[in-house]
Image (cartoon, rainbow, N blue to C red; front, side, top):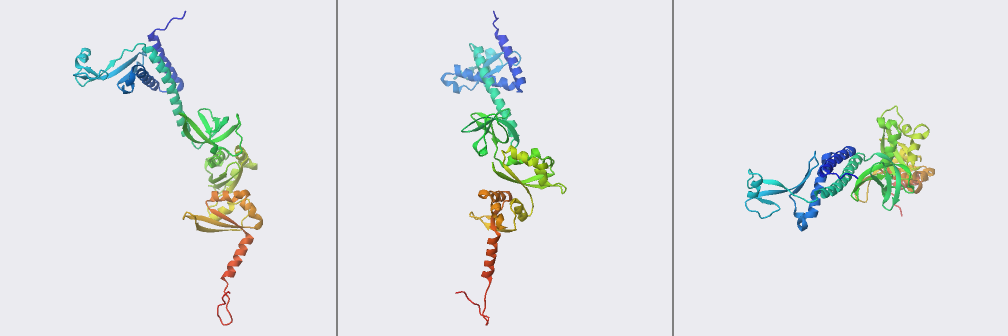
Amino acid sequence: MARRKEPEEEMINLVEVIRDLAKERDIDEEEIFKAIEDGIVAAYKREFGGQNKQEITNVSAEIDRETGEIGIYQLVEVVEEVYDDNKEISLADAQAMDPNLAIGDKLDLTIEVDDLGRLAAGAAKSSISQKLRDVESEKIKKVYKDRMGEIIKGTVLRKDNSGVYVDIGKGEACLKRNGQIKNEKYDPGKQLKFLILDVEEQNGRPTIILSRTSPELVRKLFEMEVPELKTGEVEIVAVAREHGSRSKVAVASRKPDIDAKGSFVGPRGQRVQSVMNALNGEKIDIIEFNPEPGAFIIESLQPAKVNRVEMEVAVGEDGREEKKAIVVVPDDQFTLAIGRSGQNVRLAAKLTGYKIDIKKESEDSDESSKRIIDQFVAYDAEGNKIEEN
């Protein structure tokens, strides 16, 4: 027959449990002791506070860090005449305990609680569980707040109306609808790369918010594939993306002997192909950045060929100035320059920051001829201006 444990053994075991738990979970053991002490006070208020339990503010609990002995104390003030037994003690009663006490002094009175062990055990169980949840939550917040903007690998767990839930090792991660690539399937067990966007509180727990649609994901994927990008020999100047379909990436070299575009494309196109595969086959155009706006616009409209670019400043509907470029292309390049559903010129505009109007060469020639005719003025033999009827 098993021997019943004495209260002292249970108390000592509590200390051992707290210390082992603190070591295992890498938590300051003092935090656990404090949490249990707060839990004991809360439990005491629930059981013995009656209707005034919310008004009990002068009760505390203490666990001896060596023996595990638990005490509950009530802070009272020494007064001449007692009006509130819960907060005051008479001078005579106080001096019976300590002759040196005087009016205005404060002391902790031990509260005798029947079945304190049961009260403490329940509080300890609840407090430890909550403390572990709190600590884990804080760790997750700290770790992933510091990793915002990084890429992480994850495995799809499930999908519902609120998003796709992903296993990333520690913590719960969610790919919301606005972070999902259109037409990409998120079947359970599928492994993908995600961008860490943020950490949010959901149902009282930290949730790591992921993205597959951010242009920053393209940038970070190239950092994984292009060594020259990590060393700073080449750089990504800008990214324009329509996720799930196409991206344009403007790149530049910081060293004259390094071909930026070639670095990103890689041998036999392996580097850019690797990024495209990670993005479910999304097409990627690598564009050579040029500090001269007109030349950069020409590059950004690839694969279309451009005859010339005219730069101008226009006033938008909101009254603000906007940079505008009129791009003239050969007639047979017009459709290519615009792109399917306008995608090519739209991405080029995002990439360069210019509003771009595409014109056919034939249209531009007709307009030029009209301008010349409009400016032509005829005179008769006597030098008089001939007015149009």
